[in-house]
Length: 142
Image (tube, rainbow, N blue to C red):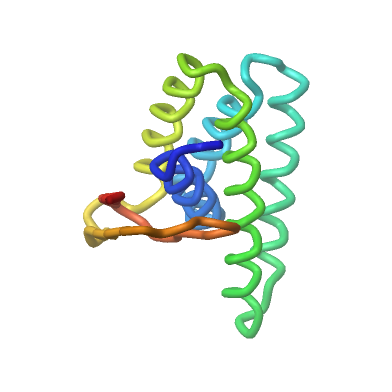
């Protein structure tokens, strides 16, 4: 079971993927996420690139009446993939993947336009949760 900080990181990663799709940041985020999830295996990385391309296509095909629902759903899909990766990795590899993911989240948003987010969690239980946002997020778990 992942600690809350890693769950929040996976959620932010899912949101960052959706946020970056269709922007100038997309190619860097797309390639970085594929590398993190591919774990050094070319075939796995290529499969992740294809999944990311499908996500971008779904987002681009969405109309204004459904875009927020589609964005939320796509972010949840990627959050789940990132959570599964972080959960299955040995501790040292998990920390490396978390650092890489944190750097990619920073690439996803336009510089200078993000607002700080502060979340305090006390006595909370997280199940199928999603945290979306951009910029720097500070999470405190009591």
